[in-house]
Length: 142
Image (cartoon, rainbow, N blue to C red; front, top):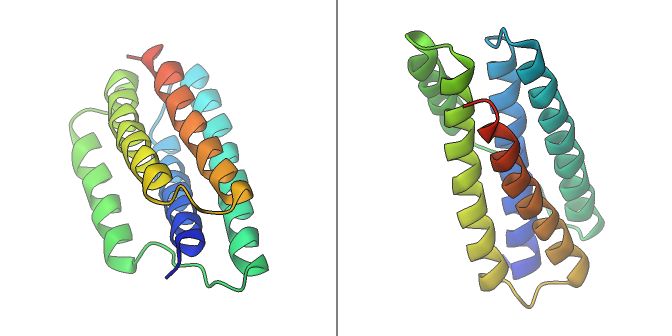
């Protein structure tokens, strides 16, 4: 797989994970302000996911979504972590940890695939900035 496809698939999978996670957590959240924040994040993850899918298809690449096993593991992990603590603070912390992982992986991929097409790098950088912003916004709910 070339760098363009690898980078786009990373963006696609990362944003897909964001969509799946927030859709699951938004059902648990009681705090209305927090729900508004999560809804905003969900919409941006969906936009980034759509943009990555379109770029993959434009370039003749297949989307490599998150595998079924990983989806199940994530679903179960969220259920386990929220079983005893459904507080806004705890869920915000969980999301901050996830966004931090996204930031680290985004920076690694930008460096690894620095020769990728500029428009693809721009999409990756959009995801990076979004994850960094999520962390800042979520701190308000700790």
